Image (cartoon, rainbow, N blue to C red; front, side, top):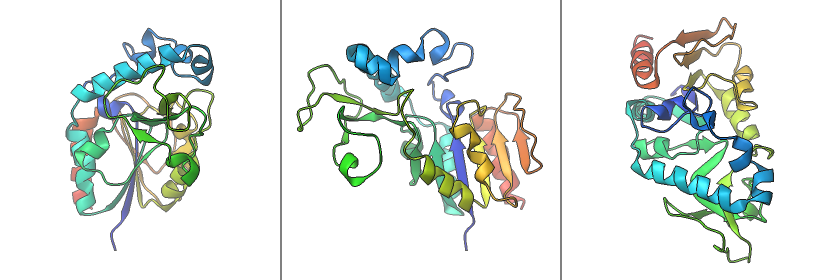
Amino acid sequence: MKKRIVVLSGAGVSAESGLSTYRDNGGLWDGIDPYEVASAEAWERQPGKVLEFYNIQRRKLAEARPNEAHRAIAGLEKDYIVDVITQNIDNLHERAGSTHVVHLHGEATKIRPENTCNESDGFSEQYVVDCGYGEVNIGDIAPNGAQYRPHIVFFGEAVPKLERAIDLVEKADILLIIGTSLQVYPAAGLYRYARASTPIWIIDPAEIPLYDRRITHIRKKACEGMEEFVRELHQE
């Protein structure tokens, strides 16, 4: 019976692919107010500006490639059941070969009509469209007559896949947290749902003030940290 590894990934896992983190110095939110381009209120006030912001993100994503950390995570599927829960809106986990990825905050390469919700039920999912890396502009209208919007969980919106993520963490035999300093809630609290017997590994170069006997902290960037993590797994 294969053990189940649940991976909780953040922006740091994609940083070595050239995609900006959000809250670090020089990160995406360093010179941009996120509530001006990535909030429910911004969409109501200035949807064109929001669409252009995500057009830019898709252009960057088109140029990015999965890195060794993404590939190492995908490679774990050879010996383990692997569920990836990512805070990232990029598709680099999938492009690296991961087959079970839950996007907590949505996906940059998808859009949906603005009058549909972001819940993962049949009614909503049937309206989601894969736009790839192309541009989406004001006047791009869905078959139901509504303007297309990014399939993103904006600031001020609920995180519809949170319950699914909690369920996966509760089933984990090993929990790996990579590329996130656990500052963004509710995702930052997911590790608390792991069973008392579940070892927790964190790969991140930053100091993370968590005091839990289950935690092993590898203070390295994602690619180098995954090398160490895989070595440790092989020694079990």
